[in-house]
Image 1 (tube, one colour):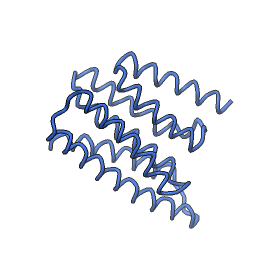
Image 2 (cartoon, rainbow, N blue to C red):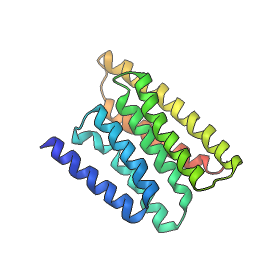
Image 3 (tube, rainbow, N blue to C red):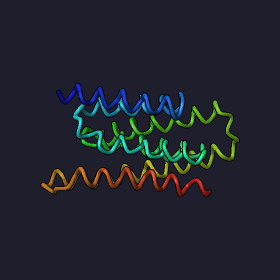
Image 4 (cartoon, rainbow, N blue to C red):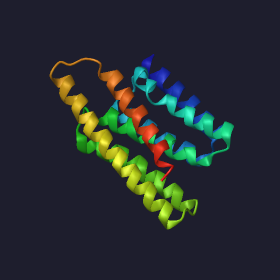
Length: 169
């Protein structure tokens, strides 16, 4: 039942991304779900992934297309955190893959060189911070520390809020 629930949530997430965001939002969502599936298909793990739809809702309500960036960073951070128990290299590759897809979308949208440079620097800085934080959570969990899920959720939320703040640059 857990895998079936995971697939159902995935399909609903991607349907919402398609209807309210369009193909770029879906493409990033698919990558995030692939990363999460590589980490495991426990439905509980989606508690930090699904809230990315709040950025889609805000973008839809406000008409602010720039909110695609915090959405993408939410999903990239989620993938990195989900894969961190495997290894930090795998986590970096997973989160970096989502960031690379985001940047590819921005190139296809004909973003200017300055905008792309700023988005790249901000995204890589956020991803690096996420990996450092995920390593700390991983060490604490190995030492018998609790609250791993809450710490991971806090990392992902902080990353997407940092991306939102990065829009001001």
